[in-house]
Image 1 (spheres, rainbow, N blue to C red):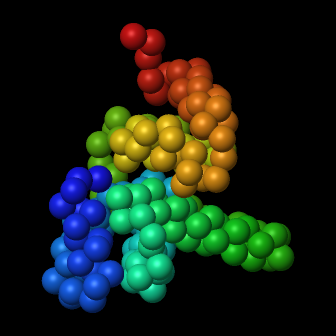
Image 2: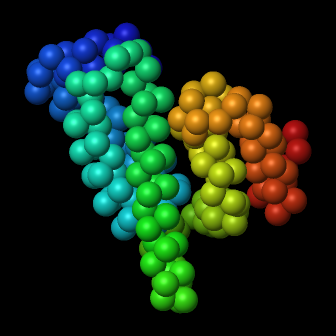
Length: 173
């Protein structure tokens, strides 16, 4: 996060609508991308909207504007987790899972293979992999977002990389 983002957060907290608009504009794509990598496109749109509603409600209470990115992704993580938990409980009650509908936009073979490999990962490993490698967040921020120790983040990254190597999705350097 840059000093400009930190300043935008402070200005947004003071009620400046232009700062809120700019924050949303600059952070919408990274949030949507994170959510999309955890869910399908249709659910990603809905969950991303929920994230921004929660951000707008909670922004006045954010005490450390410099920590906006980890705070934002913590909210996104909770929204994804809540959605998955609700869907799992509904599926458990119905004893029948909804069929997964493929996104027609996913045309590139490599991307499709990566998404398939990500989908096979347990949610905990997938989440850490997405946050660390695809959202470029440091281990410390991933630990804060997920509410786990840094060592757990590192072990989940290791397990995720091993799984992707075994599947042939990534290769040794």
